[in-house]
Image (cartoon, rainbow, N blue to C red):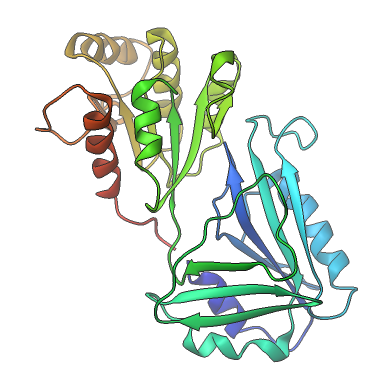
Length: 307
């Protein structure tokens, strides 16, 4: 996303703090690479609103009282403490921008790579024609002095909400490595808590994650339970349109769902947004990895979200 670069280029010579989403896990309002600029007069952009953004603004204004170059990393679990109940986690970098160190902006163009290095009381950035992107985690050890973070300039991954951690769900998650998709993965079964990356949610709350998903998110619904699949599909079609809503299932299941959705008030126009069965048409085979590749290819056809 290049909008934040335009903010920096237009920034007057005044104190400013930059808030960067370094990493997320589970359901989060915005994905890694999202930024918000905070000045004494206001802000540009958003990291998703709510209590998360309120706390980040507090931290940004506090850091403006420190010398330019000062930075800190903050972790926020999106649970009852913040009143955001989807169980995700967000890691933020909050820095007091050094306005004398923005020379790298002249080379920051889409298609290049931006390297951010955390130093002692400073944040250094440089732009490269070729560089390997690094993936940050929202858990574990925080970035420290010497940490180097590399990301594409002008691009951000599409949020991808995956419901179901069975064989197909796990195959889809395996095939996302290195792709421009930011995974938020959910299941209701307690025995799935040990699967890396899965957030276990109560059935009574899991649909709220769909309500809070950004409009450019893609959804894949493939849980172990047909009634739960229906609840999630209904929630996805009732809200503001998403970039993609996909449902796994047989022709009988899908026909039954379509009829019931119309009876429950979903308009034909909204129902037309449902992709079912999920996956690129014509890919034969019911093996989990075959289904996963067909689904992931379908998601890649959506392209990048708009900046």
